[in-house]
Amino acid sequence: MASALGFCSLNAGNRGGMLKWRSPRAAVIPNFHLPMRSNEVKNRTNVDDIKALRLITTIKTPYLPDGRFDIEAYDALMNMQIEDGVEGVIVGGTTGEGQLMSWDEHIMLIGHTVNCFGGSLKVIGNTGSNSTWEAMHATEQGFAVGMHASLHINPYYGKTSLDGLISHFKSVLPMGPTIIYNVPSRTSQDIPPDVIWNLADSPNLAGVKECVGNDRVEGYTRNGMVVWSGNDDECHDSRWEYGATGVISVTSNLVPGLMRELMFGGKNPSLNSRMMPLIKWLFHEPNPIGLNTALAQLGVVRPIFRLPYVPLPLAKRVEFVNIVDELGRENFVGKKDVQVLDDDDFILIDRY
Image (spheres, rainbow, N blue to C red):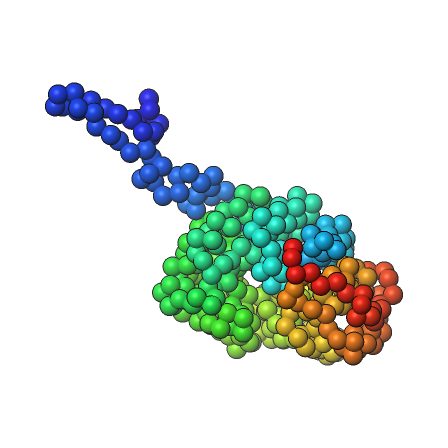
């Protein structure tokens, strides 16, 4: 029975009753000990459901004064997104500061989001890493807690070859619907189209979040690849002139209704132009510095930053108040009046 089950067994040999050792299955089958293996289909989300999403918010993670997640504020922000028609969220992305989370925090937040909001929108976990093993492990955990799809970046800092990129992505694609994220400004390595087309046969490849520009977007969409713009300042043209399915957006944290109008309402260059001062302001410093500052000024989250992020300076905070007045406070999340806030109102946390 032990042998049939694959456990370690001792069998009598042919000579003098010698015992022969047989290795357990766990020693010879890769990842036998894991609760989910990459060749098992555990996720039940149809990849076409992911491909159809037009407006995905890369959601902000708020904090309490002791550095823990402010789940109450997070849930309120999620409800604001749902009410204004957002179809999906990226949990623990760059905007959500996944890079500042432990994996325990990261997977917990994915599971919480699925549990509370997974029936209203698609939950896409940012489970990518520059370590293939870590990306596989986090993705297994993310799908185990119910996420609908995963977002994967190419290995950064310890960069690999193009063949290495293909092998890296092929290690995670079997686990479930996957969006590949190309943002060379952060990784310092482009994912060229040849790599994506090499992966295109995978039934789990939902598409690409592309930040290189609209020429690259068009090169994909013209040949049937689903693409989301990763640049809010280009997303209107990406959607209506270059064939992008939609946008994975930072700005929709603040004005989800306006971003939905840009993605669903047809060409609207007038609205797009009106949005540019806000988008330019948001990305004056590296994301998520502007977003964190703005949400604090709107009273949607506490003015708490996990270092190394710090708030925008006073002059930029005054500028944001004027932008809100110009676009209309009713278009922004939350109900409180926008405030400038004093420097002393912000709390910076170095241990969390």
